[in-house]
Length: 360
Ligand code: R5P
Image 1 (cartoon, rainbow, N blue to C red):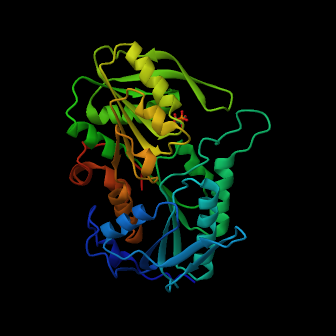
Image 2 (cartoon, rainbow, N blue to C red):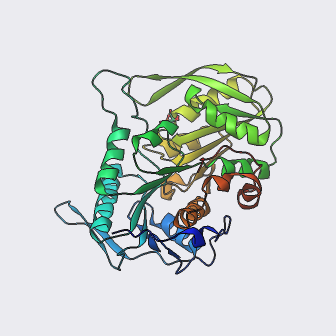
């Protein structure tokens, strides 16, 4: 049962963007902070805990020989503020099942509040009924998360912002764009044009371009059926002699960015860089991207990037500080939006001011 004690004393404990000294702190309403991980990306969870200065919670999350998933928390979480870190990485359905079962176990263990931390939200591309007799799986997954018992959700760069509305519980979406803006600046590129691979990613491209004070170009991409084949057909904007920075929410098969790179090269781009939040990198994507002629592919560790995915032209930025700061802020009832405004962003993410982040 939740208590409704006065929170005002805690509201003043602002440590903008800094999570040091968090260990042992208690939210007066939701209790002690606890972070657990499923099997989807345990190294990211460990990094987040290091940033927060707390140990990763102990839990058994495994499958029995009959293929049934089982979860047991190995420490007390009664009336505590529990964060479960589980991106929907491959195998997506197994990891989803783990997440739902972890939420259920936490609910039945009397957690004070449960936040599902989902750095990568799969099924986000199936977010509308755009053909006859198809599901809206992005919504279905959201319903399951709520039904399992989550109180809040924390995600990074959803495929479309509207997915937030699939949840009737509070949902915070963190943008990776400030991290990318900082990296682009460090790379000292000249004459940049930020490029969207389709109309859908034009808003993301505009946000990055505004931070970098550069023009944008937009590729008119067409997809053929449901078979993952992307075909770039047109380019709006001037890329001749420029360093093109492609911005994407995710790289799946790699088809979209490879096709975009081809179009940019045909239109005279001098160098091509790709920044994508989620490195899904399915099937032979690593090999194809390695031979794509893209000068550098910058992704985040929202999903594990290991083994054959670590190709020569890939670079991985960590989202652990971003997630850690957000957890710290949620736990202490502080603004998430403030992470992306003014001096806080300059200090933490090194990017310019003014990105339109979440509003609360
Ligand atoms: C699609 O609308 C997304 O923004 C990405 O362009 C897409 O998910 C990339 O998929 P793939 O790498 O398979 O072309």
